Image (cartoon, rainbow, N blue to C red; front, side):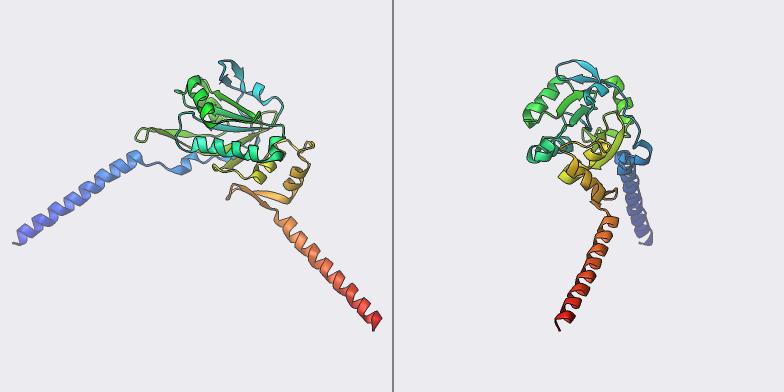
Amino acid sequence: MMMGILLFLLTVTSLIFGSAVGTRGVFKEDFFDPALLKIDESRFLGNFVLNGDVILEDGRRVKLYDLLEGKPTILLFSYYTCEGSCPVRIDKLNELIHRSESLRNRDFRVLVLSFDRKDTLEDLKRFKEGHGPFTHHWIFGIIPPEEVEAVTGSVGFRFFYSERDKTFVHANVYIFIAEDGRITRYLYGVNPKERDVRIALAETEGGRVSANSIVDLALLVCYTYDPSRSSFVINPTILFGGIGFAALGSVVLIAFAGRLLRREV
């Protein structure tokens, strides 16, 4: 009897450990650490994006810097057959530009480049037809297969292909590029805030004043970037300074009112 129980326990134990080993093997094979996608901003902010080739929808092959045209640029690495976050990220920014008069009238570029070596110009055109209309700011292109790693690597953008899910895993990020090709800001997510985009563009312009950027320069002074939120938050110096100024003003007003009351008495 005891021998039968012992054999039963050994069998169950072996099945449990066998399953665990099998699961662990699958887990190792399929496991993906999201930290691998994180861009080391300390390494890349201030660097220059590689001036690689871009294939435009009309088939022309141009240099990336030719597309900047001396304008601040929001760079999006995506792929045109994506059924996940890529179209959402593009649609949300397009909606924001349409909705915001400040952005709509501002002189900047939005450059969407596919990093999928299998993407074709037909894929690009189908994507545009299905997600437009786009404002005049937008340019769509494909990175030549032989330059994908070099161009994406120059800004720290990493991606991996999941054979199981038949999709790319990548960071959802808006990359702000100055007119000379320098990387000035990364904003993460798929639903950008108007304030964050305006401030990031003001940063990218390097303080150059235009009719559409005066208010944004004021926002740049009042807000500071919080990397933990990937968003701009009120500058604590401004906040506490304002509170102190308001408190001082209140004291002065109270003292002045007290003097008036004493005079009347």
